[in-house]
Length: 307
Ligand SMILES: Nc1ncnc2c1ncn2[C@@H]1O[C@H](COP(=O)(O)OP(=O)(O)OP(=O)(O)O)[C@@H](O)[C@H]1O
Image (cartoon, rainbow, N blue to C red; front, top):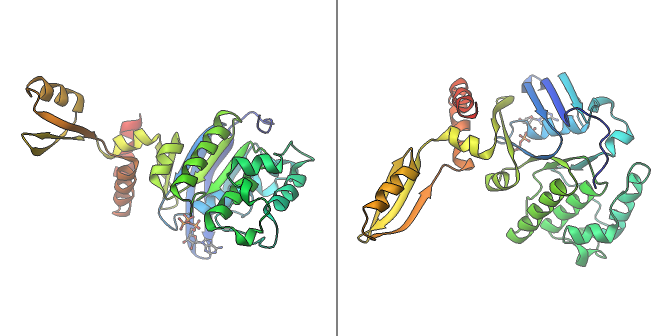
């Protein structure tokens, strides 16, 4: 089991969060509530304020204004006991190059012992695919292996809430697949609540049941990957080969179209495919609408679909 829950409300509650650097407003009134359990992905263009938001939630950055509660506590005043319930994987890697992998994991585990029952070093390294590197110095790891170590250090205290800022940067496809399995394990078996940022929309679609898109300092879309895709486009593309020729047809009711097509095809239709808008299509469309100054239209279209 994961860290025992010590409060009853939502894992994260944010109201009218504002952040200004100098004269630049980065967050302009962000509202957000995340219930305990499951994976939420925070998406948005470079510079939208994702890291800023996550670091405010982690208590690593102050804020200009707004109310924030993380596991029932204002992060600006979180104590060690509160911090021990969080897992954090930052975007930037802190250099611990001289340490050996197993030693650094063992050292971090000690920190959690007064508050929780951390993973044993070998079990944890095995889980993140670093068992063979346990005796190596950190500076000899590859980029993807270092990132796995970051993830290991983030989850070592069996966090109730885990923040992952672009966790799979530098992962090869195999490492990425293993990481996704690890995330499923953490949410399904340990009940961990996860908030992650990523630029990999395929990853967001695979991992997250809820997607938030941050742009212009606030959340412009909030829903499941499927809801977002439907918000971007209600039409599907049907492709098939008939008499050796590729045919393409866009339709709002793909099932009905295909039923009629096959009812009259005399067995000549082959390689039939239905393509629906992906999360990536939806994301690009919503952000483009937003940047074209049509934020209200984008958000309204989205609400229409998710209602
Ligand atoms: N400490 C700081 N001082 C001044 N400006 C900052 C600071 N930290 C971030 N910013 C600015 O705030 C904006 C948001 O940055 P942030 O890192 O939160 O974005 P992001 O959405 O995480 O971007 P990326 O996808 O590129 O990681 C950027 O324009 C950045 O330059």
